[in-house]
Length: 472
Image (tube, rainbow, N blue to C red; front, side):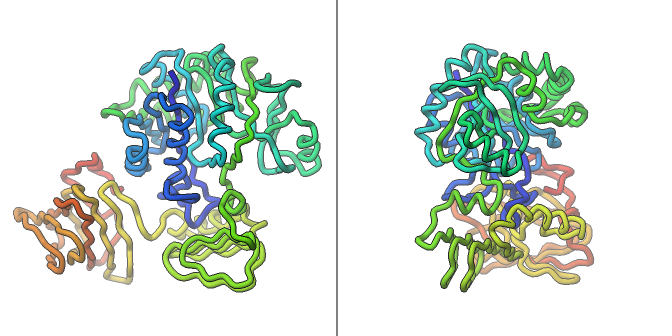
């Protein structure tokens, strides 16, 4: 049996302003109609149609987005919620513990980062099947991408001589240009993709030998965590006490069981805007364009519009990304420096570093249209059948206008329906709730009035999504 294990952590700050703390890279449809997470799940199903339910390891704060996206393409996936990020060794450890518990220690785990792209799925499938015998016999197989250029932004794996799945001789850090050219010429060096195939029992045994403290902490985090159907929430104190380390450092560089399967499948980690440009469909001038864009005499550029017209003239090898609240412009060769920009925004206390204007919630989303001292205007989109928590605010009143769909409103002891064009007032301190009882999207314009309009001014009394005491 094979179980896909999807690692859905990381913020992807080099793809800001699309990727942010509240909407990280795996959640975004960067290359098509599906998000990178969904593409990864669909790819796992394509290469192994009989795969067991996927195990997705993600941050606790992303649970609703991940569940919604996963259920749309791979129903029955198990969510493993990390209270805090601890890198790939603990993430793989807790997944292996749960896979072994659920399906047995001989179950194969196909470990895939949620934010990569593979252009040739058939080639990936062939490589996976070539690696099966080694993994079934107790090898820890990593997929090494056949390099097509002297890349200095990736770590490398050196294999023993030969063809097919070979022993790993060495893991190598990111090289300088001259060293990368030497690696390319050698024919024995591969980019480290961060994808793996091994038995759950094998990786647990190797963790026990080479990183026993990590394995012990992860055992406690699983044993003392909570479970709700297909969702496992790791115990926060136990997992927070776990040492943060990558699986490469913790196990792969130390074990004698490491093997590498060469992969030539148009792989990309989509690690920067330049990488996304390379992985995207491009026009005759080399431009990757998405959204409402007009471009004249532009070449080799990535131009992306999310909410309005972007007009560009004479750009050469540039990146232009527009969202509802940010426009980012950079030379394509400087796209790795976006992380520095995000760091500066965080130091300045700018909210744009962490959240987009439209915020996802388990019931739908809200978009802050206008915010001024003393009032704020939002657009609420409530999914069919969804319901907000029964809540109150201590510092603001709200006026709701239904602009599409039908709403069922609770305000203290009154429950009533509102259709399109109808409105109601929610006084400060009133217990209230919005429900969408129909099969159509509900849209409400909300006008907030008060001295303080922060999202933490919420007191929840009941919540379908288990968020009592939280502001998400």
